[in-house]
Image (cartoon, rainbow, N blue to C red; front, top):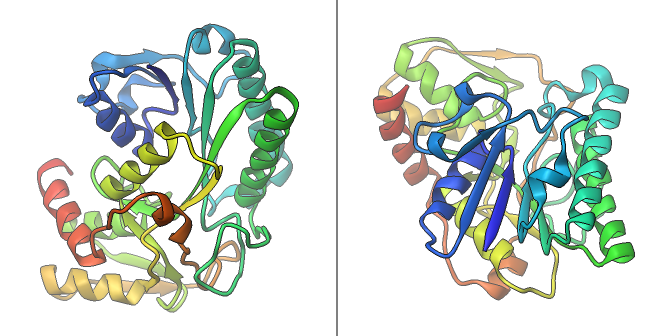
Amino acid sequence: MKITILGAASFIGTNLTLALKKEEAIEIKAIDQDRTFFSADIDKDLIVIDPLNADSDYDALLKDQDIVFHLLSSSAPSNSNQDIAKELTYNIDLSCKILEACVRQSVKRIIFVSSGGACYGNKACPIREDASLDPISAYGTQKVAIEKLLYLYDYLYGLDHRIIRLANPFGPHQRPNGRSGVITNFIAKALKGEEIVVFGDGRIVRDYIYIDDAVRMIKNIALTDLKDKIFNVASGKGEDILTIIKILEAYFGDLRVSFRERRKADVSVNYLDTSLYHSYFDDECLSLKEGIEKTIDYFKLHL
């Protein structure tokens, strides 16, 4: 089986590439724009090309591929509202080019990593896959638009697809630069003795999932013939920021924490219902504490 990962240098892409490399029957094509972003563990598998460039030759990249993972996005939820028109135009146009190439090259299946937080907006939790989609950021809006494009291309051309509405993954290979990844960012700050910045009062609730669990669930969905096409990938549990800080303080001692004004793109509470996934697969996720401890161990060696 031949698999292309567009966005392989990303946090999710790196971990997914490493996991799929362990499968003897799978040949991986890892694609991203800059070699400096890649983990040394996947560097030798790398094809360096800018997949976010509208002039990229997707037909050449996707020729003879069985499965394509679409992990590309030009922004994160926190900064996507700064230029909404640019955000939507860029990401939707990019996705159309990828889907057109998938059709022309007879790709068997495309896997799109969407967002389990940004797509739904403010909803009663836990949120099921059949909930209405009411994003409050341009990031979430472009994810919803791409989901609809996947349905359209399946309807028009029979392009099989899976949509992964992913919660908040954390763990090894996540870049602690503050753009995304609260837990990883906090751990890096704690290890350096730096101030931890919290937006809001610390009571915002999210669904945090350790990256190994997320990748296992994504692999199961991507590589299995399933009746359903849209899946929440999450722990199914909601935890607030104050709980994360409490776990870290049990490990590091008192931390320097400051609270800033809450961001408008942040929903108050978001955690997902994973019963659809578990109707197909019987596995469990690590607890938040277990995942944080494993992440601390990793960054003590690699920060």
